[in-house]
Length: 348
Image 1 (tube, one colour):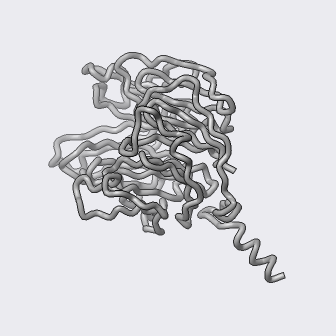
Image 2 (cartoon, rainbow, N blue to C red):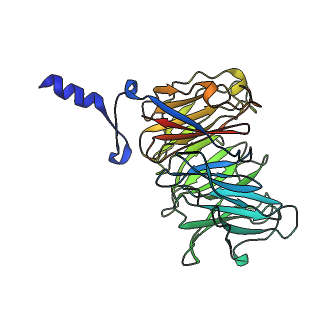
Image 3 (cartoon, helix red, strand yellow):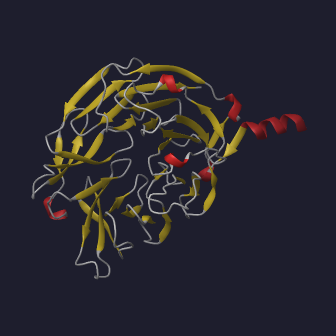
């Protein structure tokens, strides 16, 4: 009986919120890999549909949807010229875009990535222009706009307004003091529905949507889990050569450091070029970099598997080039974009 209880203990790990993920690290294996038959834009954002059957690749020029099982294209929608993709929903079905970013009166829209339909974000919500910024929550329910009030000396100068999209009503307006006089700033709603203020040098300040209380300060080069339970921070020595090269795992609700991923980082990789994706609530995280794409267990940080480089690296890419990754909500499929090569891999 004790032996059987020990086996059960090893077979499951508990995540915040009671989510279970099954299997010891040794049980994870890699399945088939498929190349997309039509390459996407090299700068494309990747997202799986909620059922994992469609992969969206949304770039500056076009949005392509692929059938995951075959790699064939199911739809292609051309984006208008001079368009900037700002944010996408978790399922990749909707993107927030700034159209005509080269003009003084650029406007913000919600863009259906499969049908090409556009819904204009009300002009009364923001100041139109090339720097106009908006974001959308992972479920598409909330849309935020970012604004700056007054000069740098004004307190507080940064504003995020969050709206209920279907009701077109203001949910909350959050103000924050500027936290760096250098670099680029913006802000908006996060995937899980919190509020963040972002500076590409100082990091990300996250606040609770309802209470307005500050949750924590995270690095600029970080990725937040869909439910907000975890944040993975990537190393960046661009402004501090003595900074750690560890890939840190932090609690998304408190900002407290929980541990680190079992990833060995070369000096040339610690420049903010890493990317990553959570596999829904399955306890798997995909770390992408030019030399390796790996699967880690959350919250232990243990390495579960590494994809063979030949199965995903593009012919025009090398180990110094960044890669873009996405993972299905069930944690059974991973997409990797390296150069102009897009591949989909099975996890078991």
